[in-house]
Length: 81
Image (cartoon, rainbow, N blue to C red):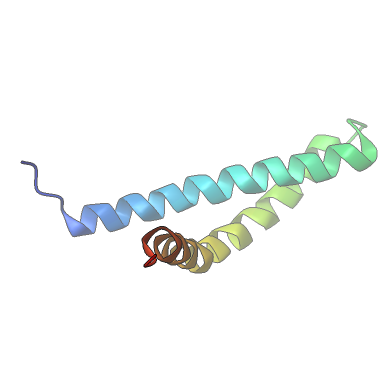
């Protein structure tokens, strides 16, 4: 049986939050920049600026919201009943 390293598991969760926040910011800024204006001139630069702003915000939020979401899911799935 393989023993898991708690530090490695914590690091894996943080790396996953980096990927999740990156991809969420990427997809949300893409949707919100393309739907209103389309792919006009200067679109890519504007989108990248919005993505670079959104990603750190999404990452910080994921650090707080992620654990809360896991706790809520655990409570929901393990409630007495």
